[in-house]
Length: 162
Image 1 (cartoon, one colour):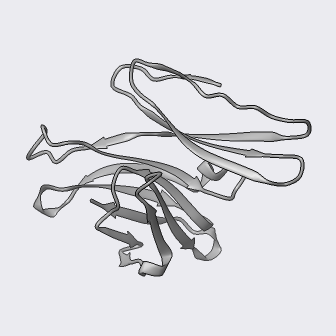
Image 2 (spheres, one colour; image 1 turned 180 degrees about the vertical axis):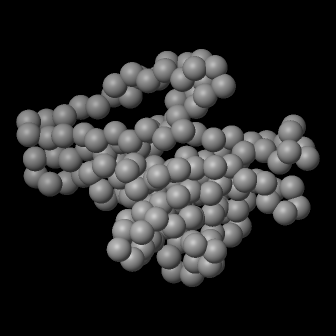
């Protein structure tokens, strides 16, 4: 699998492989602007791989454009075959105090998966704070997992504030 990012673009790739015995492995790869990145995938007999590609956003405070960028990508539902289908829209937002955030229109139930270079300070789902038990962040692999339980598959806005 080879990916190319154009100037000013970057992508995050979530790759899940499933073996014939039913075991799965997943990993996140980043594709930077102006670089080709080959992602090696080795499959045994009766095995498969599913790749989800998401735009990797660089969020910088407008008041300080020289500040290091916070990087974030919305993959969708982690355990859904076409998990990216749970992400209906994304929009960068300016936070009070000059911070940056991302609003993601999501639908479905399950674990929403994000690449995030740091943990968000606040997560709101449909305007309400999410309980700590619904959120986990791993600084090692920079993955954010958010438990979604949206009724009737109705879309809702998930706001990540950094």
